[in-house]
Length: 237
Image 1: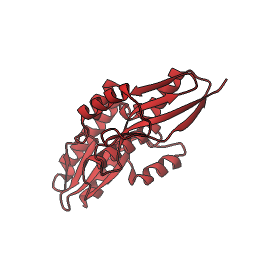
Image 2 (image 1 turned 30 degrees about the vertical axis):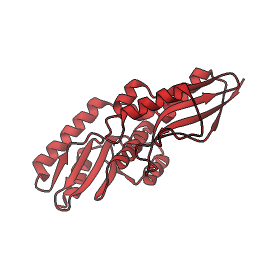
Image 3 (image 1 turned 180 degrees about the vertical axis):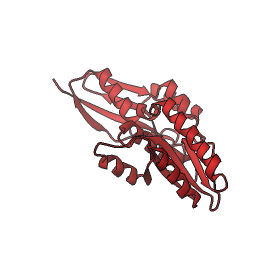
Image 4 (image 1 turned 90 degrees about the vertical axis):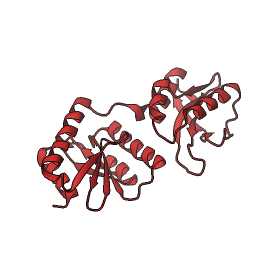
């Protein structure tokens, strides 16, 4: 039998003057149970790598919420509950909690597709740049994206991740990285790109629409010619 659940997302705003936020918890309730579920320690450890996120703030807010909950209140001008949403399901309370956690928080922290393959392509890309285009472009280290490739002529940054346009998790991860980056840094002369390392065979229109909505361009990057041509285009030669 399907039951009715009400839930809210706990949002952390690093900067009170910005609309950017990170989801850090779930509040789930039905007619018998009411529970708060906060971000897991393993995920919080990754979240606090962003300069704008203060772990002490989040920890303090969690302690406050464990003592007293006001579902419409701001906590320290940085934490707030979202509007209430409805979820109908025949699954258990804990199963629903895990589903919501995954949908709003967990998915952002998945490893990017086949790390070994990703590392091989990253090394291959750097070798092409060093051998063919080192006069025109260079790669900066970046803690968020796989690449920060800079056009030396105009200092334009190409912030990009390697992934598959057909992989929903890769799309979510790219959007998450862009939103996190924009919330933390000023982007004055840069573009965001998903370097598609798998030749798409499925309908990818939905994925393209999501990327377009977040000003992310999809670049074909699944063979050596495509890699070379992409880097050549950035180099402008």
